Amino acid sequence: MRINNGVSCYRRDCTDILSNGGPELARIELDPLTVHTVLISETTAADPDDNYYAGGESLFDRTTVLAFRDAGFDVETIDDILGLGVYLTPAVKCRKTRYRLSAGTTRACSELLEKELDQFPRLRALLLMGDTAIETVNHIARRRTGARAIPAGSTYRLRGSKYFLGSLRLFPSYLQAGHAYFIEESKREMIAEDIRAALDFSRSRSDSP
Image (cartoon, rainbow, N blue to C red):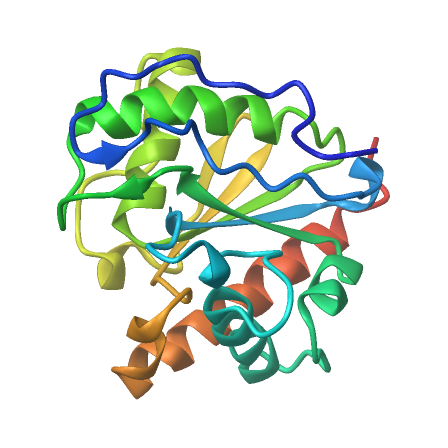
């Protein structure tokens, strides 16, 4: 199956992203039944060659491979990560023009992310890498339940607690895509811990209907 075929966004009123060309959706061949975990980062890269699945040595792919290696997984490429049952995507599919995105933009983008997640019937866990991912998934939770799934607070305090969106376990963590991954060693260690925890959870439930 070609992931994201038929997934479209028709909004052009977001003021803090470059959306004139529409969202940059990954369209890759993948069996959706093999995916049990989705890692959600922040936004599409400023340079399209840095995005997930861009081919070659994209920045997002490189730092994400390093994060999974730090977590103890013997991976060399993004295809190896897909082989673990993990799909990678940004919460916001357009390039941002400001440091912090508005609630209106993340709310609009959450509709597109929700359509993307709905393609994976055996999904068990979401790795939420950074504030934008957390906020965007909270918009999905508000539509479905009337309340946010993850409370307000620093990621440091949120990590390790149990949060759910329906049957999906949510793992708040730090951003692993891009140059920020190299800034703080302590955050790299926490990212590795969160990746291991999410995959342990998903694998423990991978045989459930």
